[in-house]
Length: 121
Image (cartoon, rainbow, N blue to C red; front, side, top):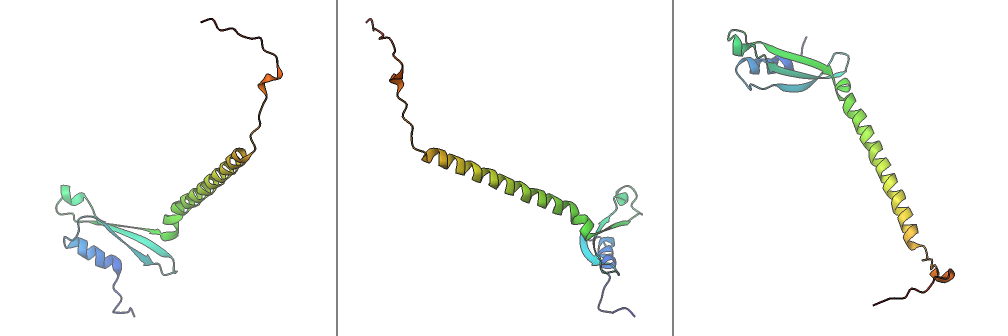
Protein backbone atom coordinates (compact mmCIF):
# COMPACT_ATOMS: atom_id res chain seq x y z
CA UNK A 1 0.00 0.00 0.00
CA UNK A 2 1.32 3.40 -0.97
CA UNK A 3 1.76 6.12 1.64
CA UNK A 4 -1.17 8.58 1.17
CA UNK A 5 0.98 11.55 2.28
CA UNK A 6 3.51 10.83 -0.47
CA UNK A 7 2.51 12.57 -3.71
CA UNK A 8 4.19 11.53 -6.94
CA UNK A 9 6.27 14.62 -7.84
CA UNK A 10 6.15 13.93 -11.60
CA UNK A 11 2.35 13.65 -11.62
CA UNK A 12 2.05 16.79 -9.49
CA UNK A 13 4.26 18.84 -11.85
CA UNK A 14 2.53 17.41 -14.93
CA UNK A 15 -0.88 18.37 -13.54
CA UNK A 16 0.30 21.93 -12.89
CA UNK A 17 1.62 22.21 -16.45
CA UNK A 18 -1.54 20.68 -17.94
CA UNK A 19 -3.72 23.21 -16.11
CA UNK A 20 -1.87 26.08 -17.77
CA UNK A 21 0.76 26.57 -15.12
CA UNK A 22 4.18 28.00 -15.90
CA UNK A 23 4.92 27.87 -19.62
CA UNK A 24 8.60 27.15 -19.03
CA UNK A 25 9.93 23.92 -17.69
CA UNK A 26 10.60 22.75 -14.21
CA UNK A 27 12.89 20.16 -12.71
CA UNK A 28 13.13 18.24 -9.48
CA UNK A 29 15.12 15.45 -7.90
CA UNK A 30 13.60 12.01 -7.40
CA UNK A 31 14.88 8.75 -6.01
CA UNK A 32 14.67 5.57 -8.05
CA UNK A 33 13.54 2.35 -6.38
CA UNK A 34 17.18 1.19 -6.22
CA UNK A 35 18.11 4.31 -4.24
CA UNK A 36 19.80 6.14 -7.12
CA UNK A 37 18.93 9.84 -7.33
CA UNK A 38 17.68 11.20 -10.64
CA UNK A 39 17.09 14.70 -11.95
CA UNK A 40 13.76 14.92 -13.75
CA UNK A 41 12.86 17.77 -16.10
CA UNK A 42 9.27 18.47 -17.12
CA UNK A 43 8.09 20.95 -19.76
CA UNK A 44 5.16 21.54 -22.06
CA UNK A 45 5.64 20.44 -25.64
CA UNK A 46 5.70 23.12 -28.32
CA UNK A 47 3.18 21.14 -30.36
CA UNK A 48 0.35 23.10 -28.75
CA UNK A 49 1.42 26.23 -30.65
CA UNK A 50 0.83 24.47 -33.99
CA UNK A 51 -1.88 22.04 -32.87
CA UNK A 52 -3.97 23.49 -30.03
CA UNK A 53 -5.53 20.10 -29.32
CA UNK A 54 -2.17 18.52 -28.46
CA UNK A 55 -1.14 19.68 -25.01
CA UNK A 56 1.60 17.16 -24.47
CA UNK A 57 4.05 17.24 -21.63
CA UNK A 58 7.65 16.10 -22.07
CA UNK A 59 9.56 14.54 -19.16
CA UNK A 60 13.20 13.46 -19.16
CA UNK A 61 15.21 11.78 -16.44
CA UNK A 62 18.92 11.26 -15.91
CA UNK A 63 20.96 9.93 -13.02
CA UNK A 64 22.32 12.78 -10.91
CA UNK A 65 25.84 11.35 -10.80
CA UNK A 66 25.89 10.99 -14.58
CA UNK A 67 24.55 14.51 -15.03
CA UNK A 68 27.13 16.08 -12.72
CA UNK A 69 30.14 14.04 -13.93
CA UNK A 70 31.33 16.66 -16.49
CA UNK A 71 31.06 19.42 -13.87
CA UNK A 72 33.18 17.41 -11.45
CA UNK A 73 35.85 16.76 -14.11
CA UNK A 74 35.99 20.47 -15.00
CA UNK A 75 36.24 21.28 -11.30
CA UNK A 76 39.29 19.03 -10.95
CA UNK A 77 40.87 20.58 -14.05
CA UNK A 78 40.31 24.07 -12.63
CA UNK A 79 41.79 23.04 -9.30
CA UNK A 80 44.83 21.64 -11.09
CA UNK A 81 45.15 24.82 -13.16
CA UNK A 82 44.99 27.05 -10.06
CA UNK A 83 47.56 24.88 -8.25
CA UNK A 84 49.89 25.02 -11.24
CA UNK A 85 49.46 28.80 -11.55
CA UNK A 86 50.17 29.24 -7.82
CA UNK A 87 53.29 27.10 -8.16
CA UNK A 88 54.56 29.13 -11.13
CA UNK A 89 53.84 32.46 -9.41
CA UNK A 90 55.55 31.29 -6.22
CA UNK A 91 58.59 30.10 -8.18
CA UNK A 92 58.85 33.38 -10.08
CA UNK A 93 58.45 35.39 -6.87
CA UNK A 94 61.22 33.36 -5.21
CA UNK A 95 63.53 33.75 -8.22
CA UNK A 96 62.96 37.53 -8.42
CA UNK A 97 63.39 37.99 -4.67
CA UNK A 98 66.73 36.13 -4.74
CA UNK A 99 67.81 38.05 -7.84
CA UNK A 100 66.94 41.44 -6.33
CA UNK A 101 68.47 40.61 -2.95
CA UNK A 102 71.84 39.56 -4.43
CA UNK A 103 74.70 42.02 -3.87
CA UNK A 104 75.37 44.34 -6.77
CA UNK A 105 78.50 43.50 -8.69
CA UNK A 106 80.60 46.53 -9.69
CA UNK A 107 82.40 46.05 -12.94
CA UNK A 108 85.43 48.22 -13.49
CA UNK A 109 85.11 49.41 -17.04
CA UNK A 110 88.67 50.81 -17.08
CA UNK A 111 90.32 47.42 -17.41
CA UNK A 112 90.88 48.05 -21.10
CA UNK A 113 92.67 51.19 -22.23
CA UNK A 114 90.53 53.30 -24.44
CA UNK A 115 91.97 56.06 -26.59
CA UNK A 116 91.08 59.56 -25.55
CA UNK A 117 88.33 61.08 -27.61
CA UNK A 118 88.70 64.77 -28.21
CA UNK A 119 85.63 66.86 -28.37
CA UNK A 120 85.63 69.48 -31.03
CA UNK A 121 83.27 72.16 -30.19
